[in-house]
Image (cartoon, rainbow, N blue to C red; front, side, top):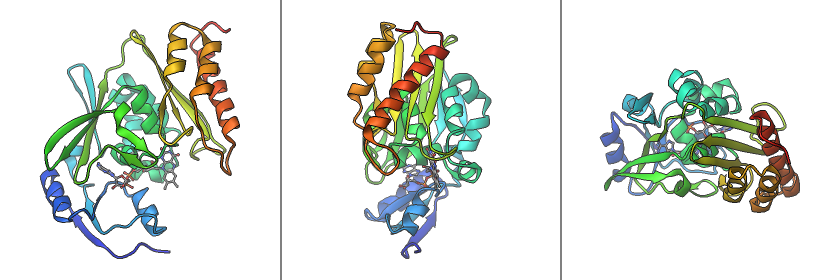
Length: 277
Ligand SMILES: Cc1cc2nc3c(=O)[nH]c(=O)nc-3n(C[C@H](O)[C@H](O)[C@H](O)COP(=O)(O)OP(=O)(O)OC[C@H]3O[C@@H](n4cnc5c(N)ncnc54)[C@H](O)[C@@H]3O)c2cc1C
Protein backbone atom coordinates (compact mmCIF):
# COMPACT_ATOMS: atom_id res chain seq x y z
CA UNK A 1 0.00 0.00 0.00
CA UNK A 2 1.20 3.56 -0.61
CA UNK A 3 0.47 6.84 1.15
CA UNK A 4 -2.58 8.84 0.12
CA UNK A 5 -1.85 11.93 -1.97
CA UNK A 6 -1.17 15.10 -0.05
CA UNK A 7 0.69 18.40 -0.19
CA UNK A 8 4.34 19.00 0.57
CA UNK A 9 6.36 22.13 1.32
CA UNK A 10 9.97 22.49 2.43
CA UNK A 11 10.46 25.12 5.14
CA UNK A 12 13.34 27.60 4.73
CA UNK A 13 13.54 28.38 8.42
CA UNK A 14 11.56 28.00 11.65
CA UNK A 15 9.26 30.96 11.10
CA UNK A 16 8.48 29.72 7.56
CA UNK A 17 7.68 26.27 9.00
CA UNK A 18 5.33 27.82 11.58
CA UNK A 19 3.61 29.84 8.81
CA UNK A 20 3.20 26.72 6.66
CA UNK A 21 1.63 24.86 9.59
CA UNK A 22 -0.70 27.78 10.35
CA UNK A 23 -1.77 27.95 6.66
CA UNK A 24 -2.49 24.20 6.63
CA UNK A 25 -5.54 24.84 8.81
CA UNK A 26 -5.03 21.87 11.14
CA UNK A 27 -4.03 19.47 8.34
CA UNK A 28 -0.24 20.06 8.58
CA UNK A 29 2.22 17.34 9.64
CA UNK A 30 5.83 18.07 10.50
CA UNK A 31 8.25 15.91 8.50
CA UNK A 32 11.71 15.45 10.09
CA UNK A 33 13.63 12.22 9.31
CA UNK A 34 10.48 10.57 7.95
CA UNK A 35 11.40 7.17 9.43
CA UNK A 36 8.18 6.79 11.40
CA UNK A 37 5.86 9.23 9.61
CA UNK A 38 6.39 7.92 6.07
CA UNK A 39 6.08 4.30 7.23
CA UNK A 40 2.80 5.16 9.00
CA UNK A 41 1.54 7.00 5.91
CA UNK A 42 2.39 4.06 3.66
CA UNK A 43 0.30 1.83 5.92
CA UNK A 44 -2.45 4.51 5.91
CA UNK A 45 -2.17 4.72 9.70
CA UNK A 46 -1.45 8.42 9.28
CA UNK A 47 -2.38 10.92 6.61
CA UNK A 48 0.02 13.45 5.22
CA UNK A 49 -2.49 16.06 4.21
CA UNK A 50 0.17 18.77 4.21
CA UNK A 51 3.72 17.72 4.97
CA UNK A 52 5.88 20.55 6.30
CA UNK A 53 9.45 19.41 5.77
CA UNK A 54 11.72 20.90 8.44
CA UNK A 55 14.71 18.67 7.69
CA UNK A 56 16.81 21.45 6.06
CA UNK A 57 16.50 23.95 8.94
CA UNK A 58 20.11 23.84 10.06
CA UNK A 59 19.46 25.98 13.20
CA UNK A 60 17.50 23.04 14.63
CA UNK A 61 20.43 20.66 14.53
CA UNK A 62 23.50 20.17 16.71
CA UNK A 63 24.63 19.84 20.32
CA UNK A 64 25.98 22.64 22.52
CA UNK A 65 26.73 23.43 26.16
CA UNK A 66 24.84 26.48 27.42
CA UNK A 67 25.85 27.35 30.98
CA UNK A 68 25.15 24.28 33.14
CA UNK A 69 22.88 22.67 30.55
CA UNK A 70 23.29 20.59 27.42
CA UNK A 71 21.12 21.67 24.48
CA UNK A 72 20.30 19.31 21.60
CA UNK A 73 18.60 20.58 18.46
CA UNK A 74 15.48 18.57 17.60
CA UNK A 75 16.82 17.69 14.15
CA UNK A 76 20.01 16.10 15.47
CA UNK A 77 20.11 12.61 14.02
CA UNK A 78 20.47 9.46 16.09
CA UNK A 79 23.82 8.60 14.46
CA UNK A 80 25.17 12.10 15.20
CA UNK A 81 24.23 11.71 18.87
CA UNK A 82 26.01 8.39 18.97
CA UNK A 83 29.36 9.92 17.95
CA UNK A 84 29.11 13.39 19.52
CA UNK A 85 31.81 14.17 22.11
CA UNK A 86 29.54 16.47 24.16
CA UNK A 87 26.90 13.75 24.36
CA UNK A 88 29.52 11.17 25.39
CA UNK A 89 30.68 13.46 28.21
CA UNK A 90 27.50 15.14 29.41
CA UNK A 91 24.64 12.75 28.53
CA UNK A 92 26.14 9.29 27.84
CA UNK A 93 22.72 7.69 28.34
CA UNK A 94 21.69 9.04 24.91
CA UNK A 95 24.77 7.56 23.24
CA UNK A 96 23.99 4.19 24.85
CA UNK A 97 20.41 4.45 23.57
CA UNK A 98 21.55 4.93 19.96
CA UNK A 99 23.19 1.50 20.03
CA UNK A 100 19.78 -0.07 20.67
CA UNK A 101 17.76 1.86 18.05
CA UNK A 102 16.90 -0.03 14.87
CA UNK A 103 19.75 -0.23 12.35
CA UNK A 104 22.18 2.10 10.60
CA UNK A 105 19.86 3.37 7.84
CA UNK A 106 17.24 4.49 10.37
CA UNK A 107 19.82 5.94 12.74
CA UNK A 108 21.26 7.99 9.86
CA UNK A 109 17.89 9.60 9.06
CA UNK A 110 15.88 9.57 12.31
CA UNK A 111 16.02 12.64 14.55
CA UNK A 112 15.74 12.88 18.32
CA UNK A 113 12.91 15.40 17.95
CA UNK A 114 11.03 13.01 15.66
CA UNK A 115 11.47 10.14 18.10
CA UNK A 116 10.18 12.26 21.02
CA UNK A 117 7.26 13.73 19.04
CA UNK A 118 6.34 10.25 17.79
CA UNK A 119 6.19 9.10 21.46
CA UNK A 120 6.35 5.37 20.95
CA UNK A 121 6.32 3.98 24.52
CA UNK A 122 8.79 1.27 23.47
CA UNK A 123 11.31 3.77 22.03
CA UNK A 124 14.53 4.57 23.86
CA UNK A 125 14.78 8.40 23.71
CA UNK A 126 11.45 9.14 25.46
CA UNK A 127 12.53 7.07 28.48
CA UNK A 128 16.01 8.65 28.36
CA UNK A 129 14.73 12.23 28.55
CA UNK A 130 12.51 11.28 31.50
CA UNK A 131 15.45 9.81 33.41
CA UNK A 132 17.64 12.81 32.52
CA UNK A 133 14.97 15.25 33.76
CA UNK A 134 15.08 17.04 30.42
CA UNK A 135 13.05 20.00 29.24
CA UNK A 136 11.49 20.09 25.76
CA UNK A 137 11.45 23.43 23.96
CA UNK A 138 8.47 24.18 21.74
CA UNK A 139 7.82 27.01 19.31
CA UNK A 140 4.33 27.80 18.07
CA UNK A 141 1.94 30.48 16.91
CA UNK A 142 1.72 31.84 20.48
CA UNK A 143 5.52 31.93 20.94
CA UNK A 144 7.91 29.66 22.86
CA UNK A 145 7.21 27.41 25.80
CA UNK A 146 9.02 24.71 27.73
CA UNK A 147 7.59 21.40 28.91
CA UNK A 148 9.30 19.06 31.36
CA UNK A 149 9.75 15.54 30.03
CA UNK A 150 7.55 14.36 32.92
CA UNK A 151 4.62 16.32 31.48
CA UNK A 152 5.34 15.73 27.79
CA UNK A 153 4.18 12.14 27.15
CA UNK A 154 0.41 11.99 27.35
CA UNK A 155 -0.55 8.61 25.86
CA UNK A 156 0.54 6.16 23.15
CA UNK A 157 1.83 8.34 20.27
CA UNK A 158 0.43 11.43 22.02
CA UNK A 159 2.40 14.33 23.47
CA UNK A 160 1.91 17.83 24.84
CA UNK A 161 2.80 19.35 21.44
CA UNK A 162 -0.17 21.52 20.45
CA UNK A 163 -1.46 22.04 16.92
CA UNK A 164 0.88 24.29 14.96
CA UNK A 165 3.81 23.80 17.36
CA UNK A 166 7.27 22.46 16.55
CA UNK A 167 9.67 20.80 18.99
CA UNK A 168 12.87 22.78 18.49
CA UNK A 169 15.29 21.49 21.14
CA UNK A 170 15.80 19.39 24.24
CA UNK A 171 17.89 20.54 27.18
CA UNK A 172 19.10 18.82 30.34
CA UNK A 173 21.55 19.32 33.21
CA UNK A 174 25.17 18.41 32.43
CA UNK A 175 26.15 15.10 34.00
CA UNK A 176 27.90 15.54 37.36
CA UNK A 177 31.48 14.17 37.66
CA UNK A 178 30.38 11.00 39.53
CA UNK A 179 27.03 10.61 37.85
CA UNK A 180 25.97 7.12 36.72
CA UNK A 181 23.89 6.83 33.55
CA UNK A 182 22.94 3.38 32.29
CA UNK A 183 20.44 1.92 29.85
CA UNK A 184 19.60 -1.78 29.84
CA UNK A 185 16.93 -3.53 27.82
CA UNK A 186 15.80 -6.89 26.50
CA UNK A 187 14.82 -7.22 22.82
CA UNK A 188 14.19 -10.36 20.82
CA UNK A 189 16.78 -9.36 18.20
CA UNK A 190 19.37 -6.61 18.12
CA UNK A 191 17.71 -3.41 16.86
CA UNK A 192 14.14 -4.55 17.57
CA UNK A 193 11.98 -2.47 19.85
CA UNK A 194 12.62 -3.69 23.39
CA UNK A 195 10.21 -5.91 25.30
CA UNK A 196 11.15 -3.75 28.29
CA UNK A 197 14.05 -1.53 29.25
CA UNK A 198 15.32 0.73 32.03
CA UNK A 199 17.13 4.08 32.05
CA UNK A 200 18.99 4.64 35.33
CA UNK A 201 20.53 7.95 36.38
CA UNK A 202 22.19 8.47 39.80
CA UNK A 203 23.11 12.03 40.76
CA UNK A 204 23.93 13.73 44.05
CA UNK A 205 20.23 14.60 44.32
CA UNK A 206 19.09 10.97 44.03
CA UNK A 207 18.23 8.25 41.54
CA UNK A 208 15.94 8.68 38.54
CA UNK A 209 14.65 5.49 36.93
CA UNK A 210 12.45 5.31 33.84
CA UNK A 211 10.94 2.35 32.03
CA UNK A 212 10.34 1.81 28.32
CA UNK A 213 8.05 -0.76 26.73
CA UNK A 214 6.00 -1.25 29.84
CA UNK A 215 2.87 0.89 29.45
CA UNK A 216 1.16 3.49 27.27
CA UNK A 217 3.90 6.05 27.93
CA UNK A 218 7.46 5.85 29.25
CA UNK A 219 7.18 5.71 33.02
CA UNK A 220 9.12 7.43 35.79
CA UNK A 221 9.27 4.69 38.42
CA UNK A 222 8.87 6.89 41.50
CA UNK A 223 8.22 4.13 44.05
CA UNK A 224 11.34 2.23 42.93
CA UNK A 225 13.36 5.48 42.93
CA UNK A 226 12.47 6.08 46.58
CA UNK A 227 13.67 2.58 47.55
CA UNK A 228 16.89 2.98 45.53
CA UNK A 229 17.62 6.22 47.38
CA UNK A 230 17.49 4.08 50.56
CA UNK A 231 19.88 1.54 48.93
CA UNK A 232 17.09 -1.06 49.24
CA UNK A 233 17.38 -3.04 45.99
CA UNK A 234 14.95 -5.78 47.06
CA UNK A 235 12.32 -3.17 47.89
CA UNK A 236 13.07 -1.30 44.67
CA UNK A 237 12.55 -4.40 42.50
CA UNK A 238 9.24 -5.17 44.24
CA UNK A 239 8.13 -1.53 43.95
CA UNK A 240 9.09 -1.40 40.28
CA UNK A 241 7.11 -4.53 39.42
CA UNK A 242 4.17 -3.15 41.37
CA UNK A 243 4.06 0.20 39.58
CA UNK A 244 4.30 -1.19 36.03
CA UNK A 245 1.22 -1.78 33.91
CA UNK A 246 2.72 -3.33 30.78
CA UNK A 247 0.77 -4.72 27.82
CA UNK A 248 0.44 -8.43 26.98
CA UNK A 249 0.87 -8.94 23.24
CA UNK A 250 2.31 -11.35 20.70
CA UNK A 251 5.85 -10.44 21.85
CA UNK A 252 5.53 -11.00 25.61
CA UNK A 253 3.05 -11.23 28.46
CA UNK A 254 2.65 -8.45 31.01
CA UNK A 255 4.03 -10.77 33.70
CA UNK A 256 7.17 -11.46 31.64
CA UNK A 257 7.74 -7.72 31.05
CA UNK A 258 7.43 -7.06 34.80
CA UNK A 259 9.86 -9.88 35.47
CA UNK A 260 12.39 -8.49 32.94
CA UNK A 261 12.20 -5.02 34.48
CA UNK A 262 13.13 -6.40 37.89
CA UNK A 263 15.99 -8.49 36.48
CA UNK A 264 17.39 -5.47 34.61
CA UNK A 265 17.26 -3.34 37.75
CA UNK A 266 19.22 -5.96 39.71
CA UNK A 267 21.81 -6.14 36.90
CA UNK A 268 22.28 -2.35 36.92
CA UNK A 269 22.60 -2.39 40.72
CA UNK A 270 25.24 -5.11 40.59
CA UNK A 271 27.17 -3.28 37.86
CA UNK A 272 27.39 -0.08 39.88
CA UNK A 273 28.51 -2.03 42.96
CA UNK A 274 25.35 -1.63 45.03
CA UNK A 275 24.72 -3.84 48.07
CA UNK A 276 22.49 -6.81 47.21
CA UNK A 277 19.51 -7.72 49.40
C1 LIG B 1 11.97 -0.43 11.11
C2 LIG B 1 12.07 0.61 12.20
C3 LIG B 1 12.62 0.25 13.41
C4 LIG B 1 12.74 1.19 14.44
N1 LIG B 1 13.27 0.79 15.63
C5 LIG B 1 13.35 1.69 16.63
C6 LIG B 1 13.89 1.32 17.90
O1 LIG B 1 14.31 0.18 18.13
N2 LIG B 1 13.92 2.26 18.89
C7 LIG B 1 13.47 3.54 18.67
O2 LIG B 1 13.52 4.35 19.59
N3 LIG B 1 12.99 3.93 17.48
C8 LIG B 1 12.91 3.04 16.46
N4 LIG B 1 12.40 3.44 15.26
C9 LIG B 1 11.91 4.83 15.11
C10 LIG B 1 13.04 5.76 14.65
O3 LIG B 1 13.85 6.07 15.78
C11 LIG B 1 12.46 7.06 14.05
O4 LIG B 1 13.46 7.68 13.33
C12 LIG B 1 11.93 8.08 15.00
O5 LIG B 1 10.96 7.55 15.87
C13 LIG B 1 11.22 9.21 14.26
O6 LIG B 1 12.15 10.16 13.92
P1 LIG B 1 12.05 10.92 12.53
O7 LIG B 1 12.96 12.07 12.61
O8 LIG B 1 12.21 9.94 11.44
O9 LIG B 1 10.53 11.49 12.58
P2 LIG B 1 9.40 11.53 11.49
O10 LIG B 1 9.10 10.15 11.02
O11 LIG B 1 9.70 12.56 10.47
O12 LIG B 1 8.18 12.06 12.40
C14 LIG B 1 7.61 11.26 13.40
C15 LIG B 1 6.45 12.03 14.05
O13 LIG B 1 6.94 13.13 14.81
C16 LIG B 1 6.46 14.38 14.28
N5 LIG B 1 7.61 15.28 14.35
C17 LIG B 1 8.87 15.00 13.90
N6 LIG B 1 9.72 16.00 14.25
C18 LIG B 1 8.98 16.92 14.90
C19 LIG B 1 9.29 18.17 15.52
N7 LIG B 1 10.55 18.64 15.54
N8 LIG B 1 8.29 18.86 16.10
C20 LIG B 1 7.02 18.37 16.09
N9 LIG B 1 6.67 17.19 15.57
C21 LIG B 1 7.64 16.47 14.97
C22 LIG B 1 5.97 14.07 12.88
O14 LIG B 1 4.93 14.95 12.47
C23 LIG B 1 5.45 12.64 13.04
O15 LIG B 1 4.19 12.65 13.64
C24 LIG B 1 12.29 2.52 14.23
C25 LIG B 1 11.75 2.90 13.00
C26 LIG B 1 11.65 1.96 11.99
C27 LIG B 1 11.07 2.39 10.65
